[in-house]
Length: 320
Image (tube, rainbow, N blue to C red; front, side, top):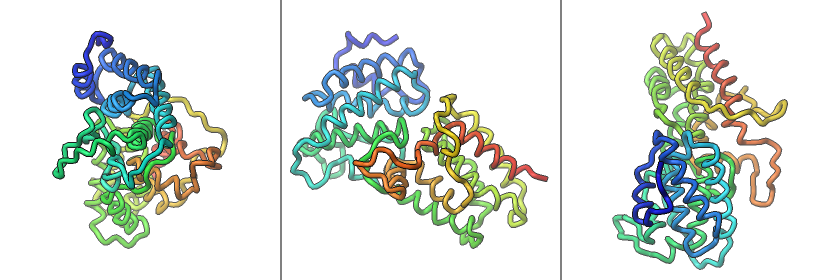
């Protein structure tokens, strides 16, 4: 077990960086809890950037299978920091956390946020410490980390899925609307095999939604190669084993409607990034003042909903 109270900041930062999705809980959870408790004790304080940095760096672990206590502590601390810092006076037109939104997927821990040192490793040698350590920028990173750990749990994420995801939506739209302009065999096989070993909740949900959106086409006479539906069946079955055992909290009729394959196709890729989920939420009229939206968008990542969706997909792909 990690003895966090006796580690220096440099040692803590090194330990944060060495955590990954598959790190053992007895190694990872003490680091998360230590960092979250320090942030929660003074979420708007002068050292908040250090502890937000730690939770962003450890979000790869937190987005996969953290201990429930560690996950809750991290989310509470990140929400508190975002609330305390977001509306501080700021003279900047933009902030570093917004810069790569058109390419930012759920793996926010893989890039350089500069929060620990106030400097970014970039071709431009960005050392604009004022913008990097601006409270609004720190709050932005806190929201991004919380959104990756628990999709649709925060507002004020910059809108916009990565360009590559929009390209995939356009390609798959041609298929689900029955006018493909790429080889559907190759496209659907690539989609079926694209799930990473430890996907975030958003990526896993997006994958299963995409498989459901396209299963009717793969099961039709339009696809003559049985290897295509076979790859999709294999992928969906593997994805189901990765779903968490979080209980369903939704009432009757609160799970999403899945009757429109083209809508599902779009949702399937928007679910896979913070900016994509923000784009999806904007479609539903989310704003900062309206906290009681009519449709619970987090239902799209509900394990019970996704289990049912996977069953429907497998039924379509394995019908004789």
